[in-house]
Amino acid sequence: MESAATTNHMEIVYERPVTLTDTPMHYCPGCGHGVVHRVLMEVINEMGIQDRTVGVAPVGCSVFAYNYMNVDMQEAAHGRASAVATGIKRVLPEKYVYSYQGDGDLAAIGTGETIHTVNRGENILMIFINNAIYGMTGGQMAPTSILGQVTSTTPYGRKSDLNGFPLKITDLVTQLPGAYYVTRQSVHTAAAVRKLKKAIEASFKYQPLKKGTCFIEVVSNCPSGWKMTPIEANAWMEKNMFPLYPIGDLKVPKQN
Amino acid sequence: MEPTSQRVDSSTQAETRLMKGNEALAEAAIRSGMQAYFGYPITPQSEILEYFTAEAPKHNFVVLQAESELAAINMVYGAGGAGARVMTSSSSPGISLMQEGISYMASAEIPCLVVNVQRGGPGLGTIQPAQGDYFQATKGGGHGDYRLLVLAPASVQEMADFVFDGFRLADKYRTPVLILADGALGQMMEKVVLPPSGSLPFIDKPWATTGKPASRERNILTSLHMEPEKMEEINVKLQDKYRKMQQEVRYEVIGAENPEMVIVAFGLTARICLKAIELAKERGIKVALLRPITLYPFPYDAIARLTSTAYAFLTVEMNAGQMVEDVRLAVNGKRPVYFKGRMGGMIPSPEDVLLEIETIAEKQQTTTV
Image (cartoon, rainbow over all chains, first blue to last red; front, side, top):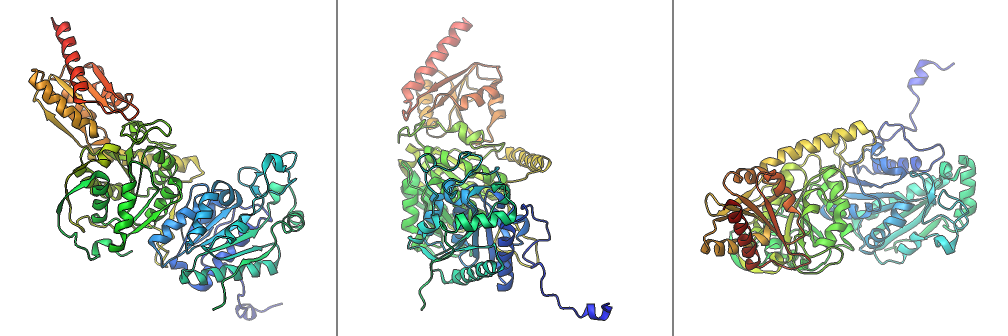
């Protein structure tokens, strides 16, 4: 039996960062959003920039991101997060500004804003959660849904002649001169989470340099929308999404 | 942000200039301490964006040509939410595109100034002046229960003055304010006395998202409230605000005392009607003009009071009859309310209006005889 004295000397090695509120998240079991939220907030806490950070929440499953992220936040209309972030960053150029969007928000209704925000090289971080489905509205086809994927609006599977092709928006924005750092990460293993954290850290360190947009795609899952267990969902993601959306850097700043 | 009122420039005194309405509005905005403008080109108001981009290097404000009106209004949302004195401008089709963002700002209580230099519609319409966006401007515009405070200039001078009023009222009520002009007011040149810079104070915006210090809770700007009880609460708060806004009602009455007939017209049309009233006077018909300066709040009481002397009301608009519905509400069946309108970018002439006045006067004589 441990003595009280021993317990008192136990070191706390893992706790909720002050940048995360003490609020139970509404995300489904196995969903990647909670992990991305946590990693993002850990970085803001560790860098000590909570008082200089403004976030923009999207419409979609992460619409309530501001309930969990303990930083000043604005809720944008569907697709407009990067335009809202542009407005914030232009009038507060010394603050850290990030947007957080899903695939429907960033790559369907907000495609115009996404492309032009990156093309202007807005000095913000854009976080893009790609889980190939509209989770919040009940599992409809997303612009990033893969061919053959069954969703509530592609009940016979996504067909290219009817629904077009999966939109590789991250590859698209990589081509734009305003993009400074573009990477595609995931959160399905501990190693993947560590890599994502490094990418977020790098993005916030780049932001004061005012060299352009940092863009992080997180290939994630949707156990509820895909109608799978979390383990099945991660396996499906690795098998079907990773070949189309390969993990790794797409554009890294040149070493000075 | 550094208040732009502290910038060094030569506009620290009032100044008289000959300017286009669009340019006078833009210059007034700079002098009002505007901190950011986001817009997209559209005729007949592109001079506003052009003026700002030309003047920007001399001043300390943000100007950005957005990729669309959708993006522009959402940039306004972001900048306004960050506490900046921010505006946008467009013309009718572009203002339609902005309605989503305006509804969100009304709900999230983000102050800003929106300028609509109207052109003829519906659809792509024409680039000629019109007043067809009255309903959109005064009854909400986007989805949900909200109103904008709407100012209707009738001269280049008011194009300038109402920028100051607009920013002041937007801050006072934490709401988007709309200036409803038209293509003629935007394009015509007149003498204008420009107010000095720095004369519009900045107020504290403790709600703004500027980064959360340890000393306060985080600021969240949102229009989403899933619990209907909470959403109703937000609506009740907005409606209380709109009731308070009624005290800002502005109008002017020009012309005959104890008039037998009252014309109600706003903006450019009001000026045309003034000429018609002069012509009517020569013909012995005593007509007065009531010009609403705020279209929301609308001067219902002022119009109602005139029913005691006037036997008829005539509303003149550059549309198919929009404000006339508010005039009828004010008159409340006590007197006949007539309407004369031109549409699609056509401007009524003083003679058109005089003809209406004479027809109404004749009808009155026939009835009384």
